[in-house]
Length: 364
Image 1 (tube, rainbow, N blue to C red):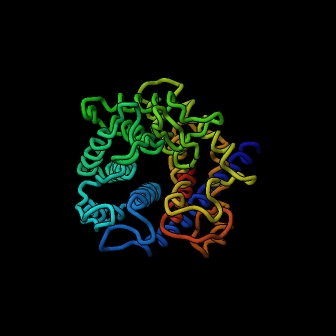
Image 2: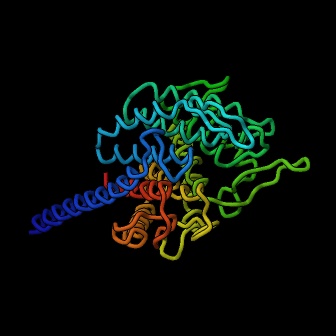
Image 3: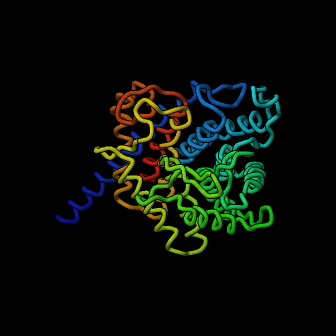
């Protein structure tokens, strides 16, 4: 009798998990359809957003294709690669028209997003050209190392951003794991450990464990920009997990969990929904509308290697809020606020897709 009851419970549990998987997958595909509406066939980018957002949208779509076993997206990746790896940039008041090649521009963080996107493409397709492109981009990023420590955020500007350093940390560890050993005279592992050590030693982490936005050198000393954003909290997580995988040192993994806990403690509302507290609900600029999904994406990676029940609950709370409230049961595209309707664009929709991808990863 007990065995029969156990079998029934197991059977029901398996079917419930299958149903949840199907439901989450279907909901994620609603978001990919919204993104398809904004895709520009001529440029290989998405309308309503800017250059760096394109890399994050591509990453979210690649992850969704992997999680839903969709091989057809490989052709789209190839099309985007051909259309975006070299193009002419129109003149502005500050700069004459120029040709952007290999995703290298004035912003080291823009470069980092594209490098990570091409690493995702490499892992999904196995095509060597994507790995080679990620390496070319990282080589340029490393030229931005300051003699005061830390990577600059923008070429020609004395500002060492948490995001440019967090991206390079994660990128270096991923390249190391893919077999790229040395870049600009330093091993990729040494780049990663040097960057993380600088982030800790420079005081970028505040007393709450949140990562502050960056450091300027003013009047002969470093001055920290204290703003805290979800994407800075997220992007380092993959790098820290990888450092733990590579070195076996527990403190890297502990740091990752501490940063997540600081985010859950200080950057969520009373319903455990992620909030970009610097700007929600109606003051977020084009960049900040991308941020929260980046946190969810890298939390997904941490949870895959070091799972916690609180992460499961957090992800499901957020995807439920997105679908039921922000999307009004799938009838609207989600905006930057995840528990009520708000203005949507390709950045906010891909950010929400990152959250649904995280939910799909829980059910693998």
